[in-house]
Image (cartoon, rainbow, N blue to C red; front, side, top):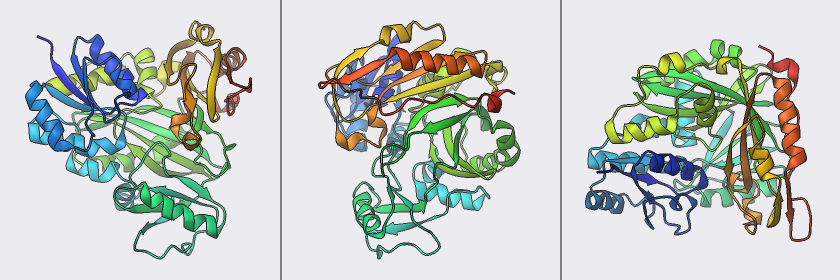
Length: 428
């Protein structure tokens, strides 16, 4: 009899996790309030229950006699995921302290302060505070709810009037009623991430990658155009930041799971922000499965059902330098509008260096104005790898010249294409 697994969340990225579970012969139950949630398409069963409705999900799990529960690609659902697993006595990778440290921006700043990890200078405001520009911080400022993800509710403010209205709006996106006001890290900063695997209480650095962001969308939150692995900062990161982060992780009593932590790098200083204690929208696991041979999705699914995370080969397979390969994810961002035509997708999929494509929209779908500046405007994430950064740049150029997406007026819908990586930075 097939094992039964509840997966929390219904976004397209979680949909890929559902497909893996189904391919493993697992009876997969997706819980999401949206009846049209993409992750429900391939699920064995689905239910319109809010991921925060712990009581109803626990009741469903008992009724269906499920063997495990797992959160998908959604930060905000990690806390209820832990509560559900605790009530059911099922395996859960989240501890009370990891929820405190990694599932809200204010909790993370406290843990960073306690362990000497530099974060972005900033302050917190609640609905009871006077909304005035914080002393010691100059405009422009980044305003973000402390407990939302994917760019939702975030905005860059260039003047005081805009700042005040943005704080009021951002407070509405926060369940806690708290916003974080930070120094705006501009285009002169580099952006990199560190992706860890926790196995048996040990943090293994599994991947590092650099991101290029679009700055062409006014005051909305910058969204990635693409990533490259390994990061040009890997050696420096291992020396300066990894030891401190390892102590931070230890204090949370984490033993199992995956986490991605982003950093701005300015004048050789790493500024930590935005931890994601779950599978990522960027999906480094796709590159890791393809190049290093282990799949975090299968590892997490097996853990949810058995309490065992990964096998004895993991430590030999884990290689942050990607076995000498260079990997790149190309994000295709769309402007607001209705998608009338998509050309070249099959040719991109058959490119010798493309090994996976996450598809979020199809022809006829509409990208709404309010999605601009969030990851909801992503059409595709295209996963590539090659033996050199030169070949990666050639592959990106091939994708750019092949894919054509137009709206009902024949206008090009792509916001901006990923530019070539500086080859001198990625010769290790």
